[in-house]
Image (cartoon, rainbow, N blue to C red; front, side, top):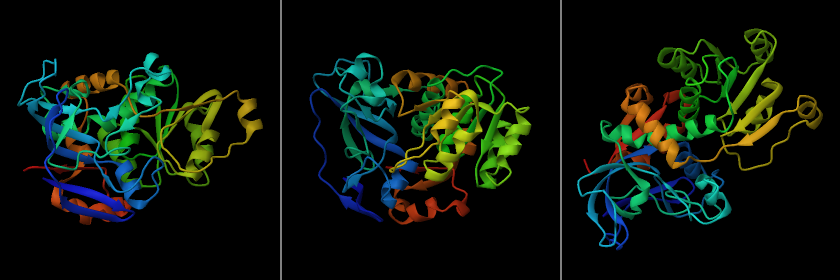
Length: 340
């Protein structure tokens, strides 16, 4: 079967691998579409925190079940098209017992900690496969990144009169905006890329968009009537913006770190302490997040066609990663077709 392997930083190769065998308690998946994630692009660039080489990438996946293992007790059937939940958890550790399977002590993310979905077939856990009637194969492949945003919003209560800032309007930031709009319409989007801010205005009716220039603090203060924001999300994963965004918060505010940076972050403790701030991290998503996002997408609440800006065949993957990483190419979400 064909596969695409990230051999080392900056090197993707199309390779033939032996066909996988079907384990008795698994189902065999034929891959349909693979979304290209910031995690994939960071792994390619060599700055992903939880990554080793070589690795088959791919964790934003839609697939078709082609065979069921003999010991599988499930309502899944051959021919079902499914959303793949890429987070393998133990179900036994403290985090799992508390329902936080997204940060299981032995969590293995498909396509990050173990080989992922950029291959013709793979054997997978049936309880991590979700049918999503009414969604096409491309839409199924973008469920996972939207779940990241939904989980992040659930990390902190948002009242309808709260001001919310999302810093970093890439694919994950868009998912945060979309999820936050279920709670409030008082949202400010911040990004250095003006095209992404225009995307927010056009497709999500975000009134307040800012570029993080020297006047950004005063602009936030003006928009919020002097109160500043009660909830701030970082979706940049970049040290400078991550350290700056905490300044946007009001007293008692909550800062949710969704973007991941490999290094140390530095915050001024007296400033944090005087405002009694809370700093939270948000990692991955839970099964409940997947069900919620699928339901909203089935209700046509998300502009999938606008979000997917680049529809490519898998053959483009080895040569296009550098292009997709360049902001001037206005890439929001790439979805690659496999086996078509």
